[in-house]
Image (cartoon, rainbow, N blue to C red):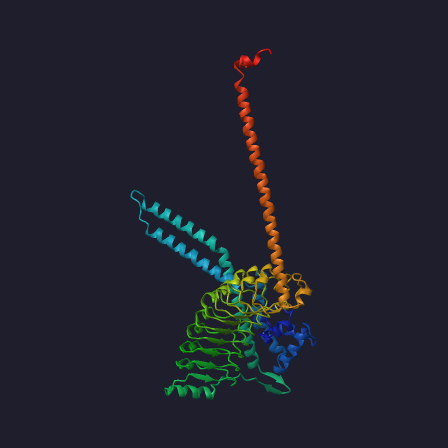
Length: 527
């Protein structure tokens, strides 16, 4: 939960430079500055990598370690330290899909409560019932329903609140980093008798962009705009007026924000935003209903907006080389035309279950993440041809049995994981021609089989599957024989019981009252 030095370099530097200082209110400014002056030390305290990055930062901001500047920055990070302490107590951020499920459940419970309350309000007072008593009874019912709803939603609300707290913490980190930059930019420090001031960078609209907007105003109707590698820092909202635009390339620039007005590009089919400084995408991107290709790779995206699921025409989505930790919960239910999904080099821990509904998906790149499991229904992706799950390191330990149902899978990369055994259905992947299992602690199949190649692996797993089926069949036969034998014994026992019962009844028939024999006299004659 500490600030990431790559995303928040100044904040990370300040908090690591003064780890023992108790953050004090602004009225204690002089005391804080004195503490800093006493604790400043030239030696690194957080490892060589951290020290090197801090040294690089100090080259860019040479006055960062000045006591007065550092004191001001220390006061500015007090909220971060307090929030971090709270989050360390509450625990890590919950899974995105779990939060969405909790929100849905809360909505359902509150809708049900509203219906109950509406029924209470509209219920007529029965004849002969006192008005005050009726109101008291209805108030008691309302209280009961509200308490029941509160009890049902308690855990869900706690989960949502924890997620919102983490979200607020992320925003606090961003705002604090910006505040620290402003503190440094506006600070005047003494440097060899001269006043040093670092001016802020101004935003200017690129002349080429202005020319494009002017050209559009003439009514020419541009269909393609190439602005790759122009060092753009700012995209004016007027860009949304290019209604006829089909292809827009803004890759390899320094854009930090895409304006909401991009929703005006109603005919846009291809959008390239790779290699910029984007930390988020506007929700309005979901209004690009004709978008087929979206490339947002190599940015600083923390998440994709949920509205991206509305871009139902998407055929290819590349969000690789970002900081994603999850995918939108409903992404698979709506992006039914997606054929290629690239999310490698992120921090994704799991796939939403909806991804199994991407029936058109042919190529899935998810290597170098933190994936710990695949959805059990992954076998529904019948058209999947290439699947790359390599380099999820210690997180990915097993595969679901349904992976054997990927009938069109041709290439599978599982290298650099912690998989001990392939599922018994693996041999069903008849079209698999390329397989990488390197750097896994595999036991099934053994190493000597893996070294012989993909066909040997498939043959081994097929034979293993046949052996398992034969073993189960034999087991079923034994159980059937046991049941047959048990059934014969039961039938024999039943027959014997009936015979004994009949004999007993016959014998009792010859015994008269008082125990005297009533047998035929002929049987008692002397021979």
